[in-house]
Image 1 (cartoon, rainbow, N blue to C red):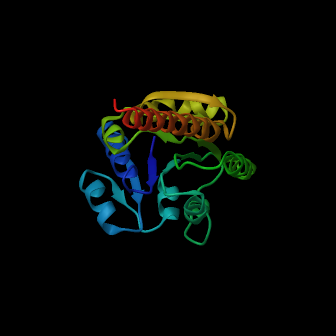
Image 2: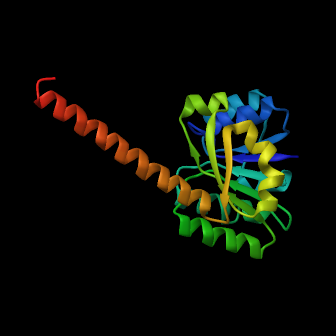
Length: 196
């Protein structure tokens, strides 16, 4: 399986390096040359545009900052969608609003492109170690094909349901973690004010 990777920031770079280490042929793009250099040195093919990545690889992983950045790397004259065609597969690991993930999956499906919304839980160290939690939404068939690749990136890879389910699961996780942190902060405040 030829793999493309677009977005080599704090999380994307260690994930791309894990795929290289697992033996996947990989084509990469990032707008910052300094982000591409260490991944190219490890064996990836550096591409000038997202479209070039898509022409070389049937499976493309996107790990950029937000929904607007996903749109930017997909659309436009040099976007992924100018190079990808029917039968291509996209794994969007950027955290998206669930409705945006569902809308994007529908738009891609109409072009014959399968998509998983697969946000992650964890940090840079967990990305490097391959111990992230990967919460995937999308068609079960696409998930089955892409699970070996996702298993290289995460220690817990779970199919949460149809398109948007991965993004919704990530939102639920963030709510739970926020409330837990708020509870810890309140407990410390109570303890401090009580002289404990």
